[in-house]
Length: 285
Image 1: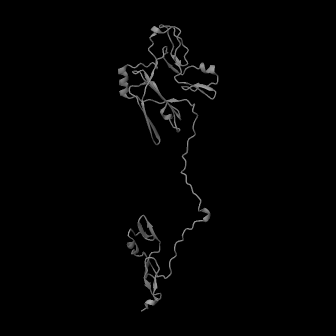
Image 2 (image 1 turned 45 degrees about the vertical axis):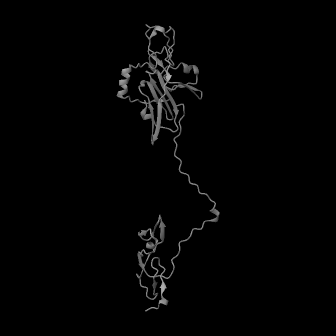
Image 3 (image 1 turned 135 degrees about the vertical axis):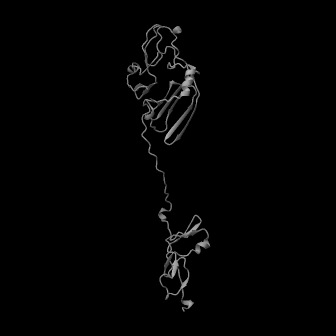
């Protein structure tokens, strides 16, 4: 037998037994060739899947590899030594910026959104006998002086009396826009730099003449909005509005709303410039 004084301590991880260097066959040592790890209260070895939370249990995990005993201490992993030249270096990370679509010009003409009118609203309109005269009073000619000009924008027809056979009124339903020397109506895209030519532009909408302009009050409607990518939802709470004399118009960056309430003789108007660029062409006429 070998004297205990001649025995050597095995430094293989997980073994730590004494062995006779003259009697050290292959397979006599059971050890862990990997590194210990400590993560989220768990302890284990990188070479096997066994892990635990108790440190004593961790020390007693049997090795996963057979080999010869070794009296040579395994190399310790290299410690990170920071470079003195980069100790004060600050590494700043910025999240990638979203790609923004090019913003179109603000003066682009607005287009009407296609309305979907519920059957309930149609019944309400029939019950209140709403007149569809584009926001004008009835053509009761009792108090209209002869020679009164039509109040619709762009129309030059004068009132000739109750028995006169009038042609359809051709007028502009939008508003005049003056931008970078150009003059045009928001409802059509005929642009000109000459003011007289602008005044002579024939209307793009047909309807009845307006001899007496109705004065409408301002209606207050609750307006809410929210965004769930990629949709922006705008809700306006407006009971018994007249869809035939109301409109919602859009461009890529603008929204114009006008809702008419004939029973209250009022109108709700709202114009907004949108923060982002929207795709709206599939919803407009």
